[in-house]
Image 1: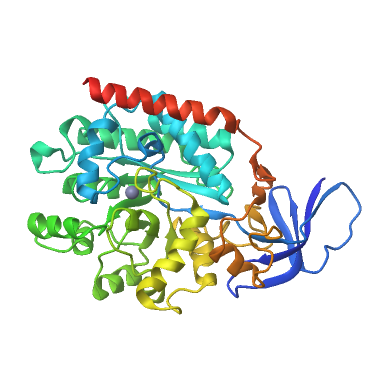
Image 2: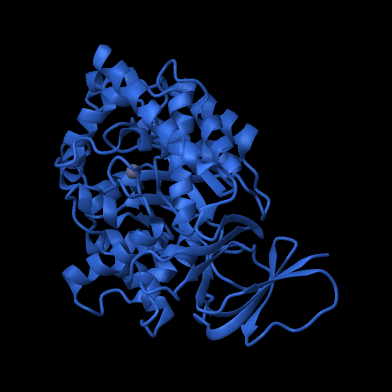
Length: 454
Ligand SMILES: [Zn+2]
């Protein structure tokens, strides 16, 4: 039995007490964390691999709670626009996404996340063009290849422009077909076991692209099937105006009226939420994926992340789709969460350790997976990141957590998912990164050619 020992590194466990070690050890066995503590690891007979972690910081693997992997194929478009303008520019291009485009985009997006310390990814895939193929199956296969734990959401849109929605009719689906596809996705892919590599959630896209009927029926199906629910909410002032005009209430009130608050639900964004709405989210245990980089890129505002945490809301971080966050780096989102909160709330608004908790344990709570991931504790899955802080970029920053959060993204010495290496010495060990650029270039070229030629 081979045990993996990492020692000599600083450790931020992000457990309930936020225990840290200036110089400690982590022992991994059978894909689980066996021991975490100060000083060198206890000596044991038998096979072992020993990693010298001096000059490094070990953290739980970061958890991404909101993304649209397919959008890697349409980065850098409509980059000075609001959300609704940006969507109206991109929907007609997205109408031509197929399996080949999805594969290249998902691989690139997943690799970027792995390189930024992420071990668990949720993806909100709501785009299913009529001739697009099995896009959900393709991204699940991409996550398996890259080696990341995956929590894709079978998303959907059924409110086209002709019915008062924002998306053009060619990218929306029929409600019965959506519900059937959701059922199939759960049957084929959802694994409820604690060490699952794939779990499914259901995720109608947003108030302005989905009917009330679909929202209600998706919630019923999710609860019958024991899977979680996800959607976009309260991202922009324009969405708030849409809800007031169409439903006569604010976004959170609208979702509550549809049975969509609860500890099995998480919303992306929640930028424009009132104090009483934050109270409702907290009282019901409804989670939030905070996406500071995307919100800033679209000029949408910044979610009151710590006010939500204080109110008892589970809050995690998300990069959001790469079409509204071209970097799509989760460790950068960690820095953004701290910096943007301070830009509006002062230097105490969000500490570096608050930020690290959002990126790890907070995200695990949002995904309902905090019994197995999100902190470095014996008995949890060995999903961890080992960051190098001994280069000129970080070496003189005394607090290793401050170095990780406030400094540039450090080189990643090792990224483990269930004890299996995905990144080693800042390079992917699972897929050929050299080929990604060609694949992504070709996918984007194909997509834009089709969109222009329509
Ligand atoms: Zn999104």
